[in-house]
Structures are given as structure tokens and as C-alpha cells.
Length: 182
Image (tube, rainbow, N blue to C red; front, side, top):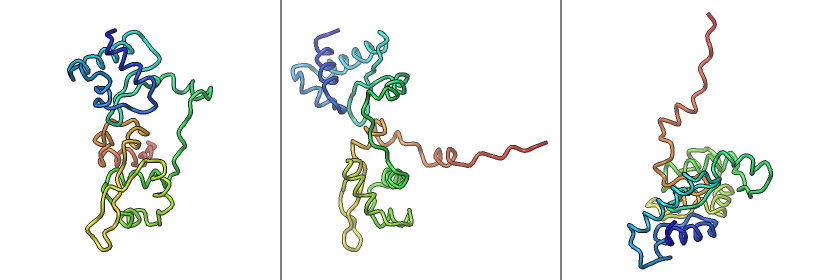
């Protein structure tokens, strides 16, 4: 492995969050972006080809060393990994609305959900999953909410375009057809 790939590996191993390409480039400013991309590819290949229990993944606009999916269940069962706190159904529903409709105001979310969401918004904001991204043009210039890089990291997404399309969701959420008896 090249010295640059080893340096990237050390930084990625030490970090608890995804590291952007720009942050990785700052580790070795004398190396070109092409050399950096080559070192990232070398590191990914190293983990893939040599059969490691971890892999290098691109998520939330950065790179992170993660446990391979096939080992996650055993590690969780042994309670060796800290698991992020689960989100309630109300929080997930609100988060989905924000992710698909952002930027969106509290009133618009409440209109869609049909219930008040003050506590849910506060909880999502405290967890860093959403943030205020601006102000609306309507009466009182309401706060507009959007998702954050922590949201992408939490759901292992590289970018918002990886969210399922609305038409795919409609198919996935449709009730299964009743089996007909002949």
C-alpha cells in the first residue's frame, strides 16, 4: 500500500464520522486530487480483495470505514457496537416529509401530518438530523427546515438523490394483493 493510502486509512480509522475528500486532501496538500482518488481506490480495493471485515464506503458526502453488512447482526447481538437511538414513528414520518419536500415550514408539515409537531421537530433538530435552512416568503417569514449531513450518515446515503422515488414508495407501501382461491 502506498504511503498516502496508509495515511488516509489512519485518518478514516480515527474518525467517528465520514471525512470529505477536501478534508482528506488537507492531510497531504502536496498530493494531487488524482493521487488522492487513486489512494482511495487502492484502500477500497485493499479491503475488498483481501477479505476484511470492514469496507470503505462513501456516505454523507464523505468516506468512512464501516463494518461489512454480513457481520453487523453478530456485532449488535454481542452488544459490541453503540447503536443510534431509534426514531419514533412520528419522527420518521416527519423526517420523511422534510427529506422529500425540503425546504419546508412547520405549518406545511403539520398540514400534511394533521397533528402538531413541535416536540418532534425539536427532537430531530437536537439529534442533528434537520436544521433551519432559511426563511419562507409567507406571512411571518416562517423557518424552513431541511435535512443535514448527519441525516445522510444516519441512513447511509451519499446524497438525497439516493432516497427512493415517490412512485417506488407507492409500490412498496401498497397492501399485498389478496390471494384468490380457485
